Image 1 (spheres, rainbow, N blue to C red):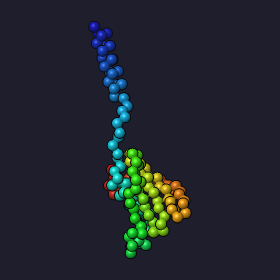
Image 2: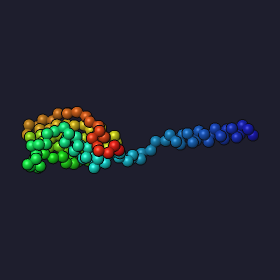
Image 3: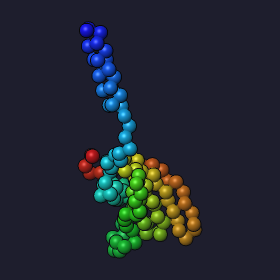
Image 4: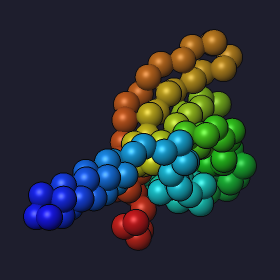
Amino acid sequence: MKHVITLLALMGLLFCSCHGNRTTDAVQPSRITAEMALEGVNNYCHRTYDWSVAEDDSTIMYVTMGEETESEYKVIFRSYTGALVNFYVDKANGTTRMVESVPVLGVDSVAGIIDLLDYLDRKN
């Protein structure tokens, strides 16, 4: 009888441990929201770039939301020179790739990576 109880206990333990390790195809919720992406990039741009040239005309420099995919947000900074910096914000962790673009020259270049969470007023 002891052997049967021990066997059942081991089978139960095995079943529970296997069940807990199953992978699912469920989509994990985003940690970074669109609002957080826009806020963080806006804060970064205001700390990094000189906005004094836009004091008289706020339309020559701005930060705006771009397209969204399943995994990232695109936030666009437009400089008074017409250059664009596209920020690709990873929804899961806030890692943000920057790609500078000069549309009139057709030139794109990787500008670096930032952690969006470093530029949010609230740490989420």
